[in-house]
Image 1 (tube, rainbow, N blue to C red):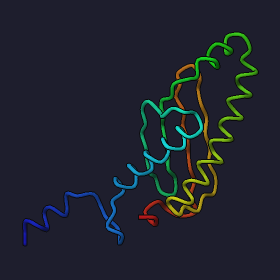
Image 2 (image 1 turned 120 degrees about the vertical axis):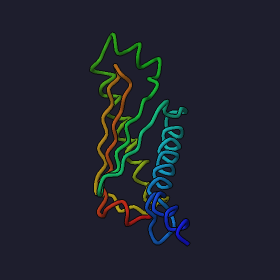
Image 3 (image 1 turned 180 degrees about the vertical axis):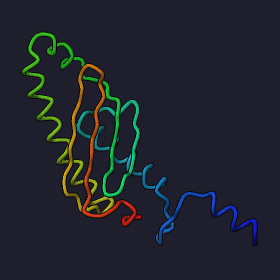
Amino acid sequence: MIRETKMLQTELPMNRTGKSIGDLKQALSREYNQVNKHLFDAGVRKQQVDCIGNKIVFTTLHKRVYAMRTIDGRNRDLTRTLDVMLIDEFKQHLRKHFTATFGFSIVSIFKDYDPHTELAVTVIILEEDVEVYL
């Protein structure tokens, strides 16, 4: 009995559903990548997911489309406009997919992308703390 108690204390905290925050973060990572693949025919190269209160933060490394990289040197205003359009499209798909998949009540989604480093940060703000969805 004492051993079982010690084992439970070292595991990640679990909620009434029996799922840990680690399980949720893995699922979030997988589903984020699915949305990315659906829109861009490519997954992310590297990804980190953090859950802080009612916020989910994705820090991702992408592979910039070669055509966009080429145009960047000639007309950054055009590629910036295209980046914003693609980000808006991504946020709409992500909102729809995460609401259906996880039952999230999403207040807002913020995303920015740096084409030079190919890093993106996406912040999802929920109505309630992430732990409520475990």
